[in-house]
Image: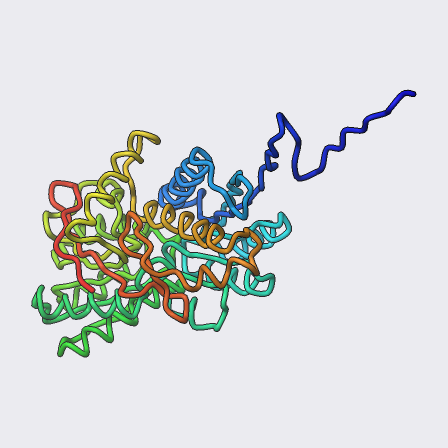
Length: 380
């Protein structure tokens, strides 16, 4: 009598040598940033931070719910444009991503956040600072850095109390980020007893600022604050020099990049520029961030611009929540993500409040000397 043996191979596992090897759990993580356009250098910096985290996680062999996870990065370019940002968000949603890291700009992050919320997909922005992002009540929205209220307000206070500004002018680029941080800066100046002598605006694609700078020059400001990104701030600094304006130049994290001296084409005087990065570490925590910067340079042959460490931490925080929940399904790990507390990242200890904002967010104040960023202080 012939006995037929059937070997059944399940979709989720195969039998080998008496042991069950779980099939890889594919986890798709979306990333969105402007990798084309004027601030592509910042978007690429972000994307490299995500790639670094994904590659390290795959090398570690992370287990989620008893299965080995294989992480895939789905990277999209939003060109810092709100319409392209929502299109990129929809593309990631259609691709069934398990979570999204991004966007870089507040102007793209905020409209995209509604789409992610409607589809229940957790989103962590590493860099969007406009307060509205986490004020819409979306349970899926989280941010890794302090918001504009803290950033702009702190810079406004610093302009009056530390830089002793007597006549302060403000320019913004009319984006959600630029206008938001400029508004908060102006409030910070007023709260500290300072005086704003003029408010002008441009746009995030502009290259000629002669008219607004000439108008402000007549008011003899000793400080000019710009709410916008480094791609616009660089040419603005060049034209200030051409017009003989020697005022201090201030801005938020959007201008606080390693590229700013190059974009300003050597026209920045030492200590002329003061800016703040939304984040920062002190004491023993500095070692982890410095190691990240060294490893990043070794891997990509590029220096960290601003946000790559925050992207790197955002990916790892999201995955830590999946591990804790035993699932990569958004609805299952989202509650664990919201409860994140005490996570030790390269950007410091990470915890979220009930709005999804980072708790006890730090700011790092910088100036530039000999074409290099020089840290002034870390404030909270």
